[in-house]
Image 1: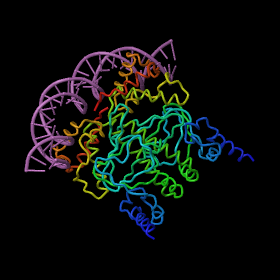
Image 2: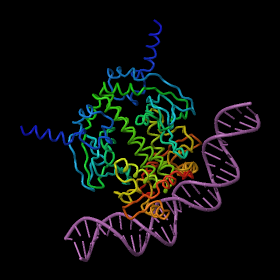
Image 3: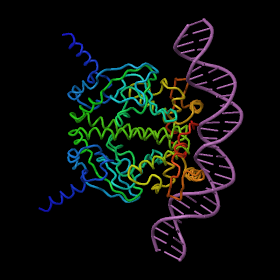
Image 4: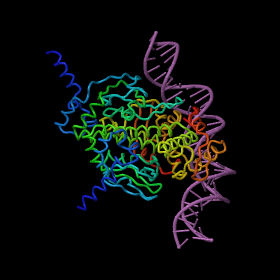
Length: 246
Length: 246
DNA sequence: GGCGACCCTTGATCCGCGTCAATTCCCCAT
DNA sequence: ATGGGGAATTGACGCGGATCAAGGGTCGCC
């Protein structure tokens, strides 16, 4: 009598239909019935302490992860040991899609604050999306959007100057925080200057200098990791100035 | 009697099971039976003349495309009109995956030489991959690999210096040509210096100068669009030199 | 077959950002 | 409270690659 009771509890606890992130996460746009069929999508949840990694590049791939709360960076390490930050992830975003192609993760996912993820065994994702057209469709959309996001970063890195890149970064962060119900104008950076720099293709000193400059220009206020955006229109203007880098 | 005969002919003509690219393309790894079920995946073929576009950013998305022969570039245009080359595609590679997420293409695909693609209506791709597990699996792998590829470019742009990037570009081209049965060491660039530069985040003059330098160093021979790779190990050494950019 | 439109090459100069270095700030652990 | 260490800031300087400019090669089109 006891074991099934616990199993039910676990199921409920990890049920997408009960999750307040369902409007952001994989089940977005599904109706109540459809949601219920998803309730065994998530096998367990897993807590990751700040500084620890969810998975490492090279590890075998078996599951996708949805961020419940917390903050992650993904990093890629090249043959010669250089490390590049390839993305930052927050609640409702999906991790691990890089592993599908080769059955091994290519990047490492590290928590930048104490975090929790929903573990979705990939076999289950595929099975459910075969049986279940709306999930299939949405899953494909999520994969595709990751491609589009990456191409956006390529454009950032390939054709914008340092100040434009940093402005774009701040605007993007602000938008994503807003979507999640946080303040659009005031937030705490979870990553270091070095990590921002790696992501944006510049050195930490440059990041720091640009923060100071944006502050002088009255567009933001920065104190260490605290950022307040005063003039988001100004930042948008900076990121769109057409006068090139290359 | 006549119409069905033509229909059969068309079917045969566009059948994956008859295509010599099936080992590179979507149906990779499927057995004969499985391949046959795919024979109505491709609705038609479409020829694109050099300089023409298969689709433009902003257009509604309806199908994926597999390159039969030819060569494409994909470009992204930012709000302020800057254009960034985000990739080059050759036979057997899949185009259009950027459109799935928003039902609109985000990038423009332009033929750099006279080309032909197989048109795969996306609804059909999804339907077949629901009914057909190996296709589903492989399709997911293709999407995931595109993500990984893009992350590789991010690393390139974010953490390598110009000469490393260009060396990496040449090595990558050579590899992909080899896979397709072409010479690994001698080929014709289908894109201009400007397009290479855009892709690699540098100016065309820099591309040109680096080509000349690689030639002086005895690693390649270049005459306009003709490239001969003499010392691929040397190029690999250049792309891996750890002494940073940022 | 010759003319024009690109494309490529190469040089000279300049500047954005990387590099190196010193100092300060902040958080955390004792 | 206090000391230690990582993170951030700021300045001085130099270099890689952008910018500007001129010339030459190649191919398609009349």
